[in-house]
Amino acid sequence: MSQDKTQETSGVTAVVRALRVLEAFGMEDAQLSLAELARRTGLHKTTALRMARTLATENYLVQREDGNWRLGRAVGWLGACYQATFDVHEVVEPVLRELSAKTGESTSFYVREGNQRTCLARVNGPRTIRHTVRVGVGFPLDLGAPGRVILAYGGEAGEPYESIRQSGYAMSLGERDPEVSSVAAPIFGLHWRLLGSICISGPTSRLSKKKLLELAQTIMQAANQLSYAIAGNRAPTLTGQGAAKATWHP
Image (cartoon, rainbow, N blue to C red):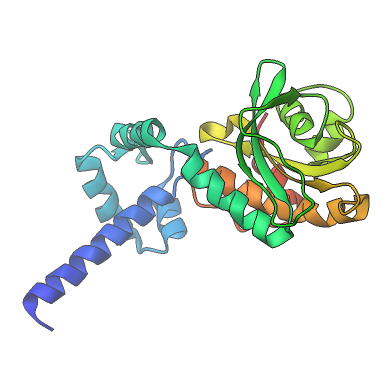
């Protein structure tokens, strides 16, 4: 291998290791010890220390007086830039298309506007008989699965909101429209701030309670992955109800 190629490979390896050190920090990690950094990254302590010191010279990490490490201001600046330039549609719409193709039903992303939920993004199902909604249309928050999810994860007390928070999703069988049924799950942004909800909806004749229960796992997994993508984090290796509930910190 040529000297230039060797140096290039070495440089790439160093960058990957440095990124692994930064990615070792989670939402609840105000600081990490060198031993914990080494454990989470799989690097030798000496290597982890060298990476951390290099990152500290550029303000990506800061070493505390007790020897532990925390994220530096340069990371915060990158996060602010990411949030300022992030287009939610670029992330949400591909997920909606994938969900629609997978389930054969319509999919939507709703956000709260006052006492209503507004459809911000929409993919109509491929079938001839389907549920259709125009982007920008608003509906009552307390009617339909998407609105009830927003209320539940917005802190609404009592039932059915306690049950929704426990299960990680909401179902609606003809609640707002007797011919339409849906299942929805919450979407979170940076610092797990509630952004809205995504839902799968279709004719009640196709989406029975049994079918909605089958789709609940699908919508929770999609919502969980989407929340991590929007927040700029890697998704956890969780499945089922634990995955949906893991994204909410009231």
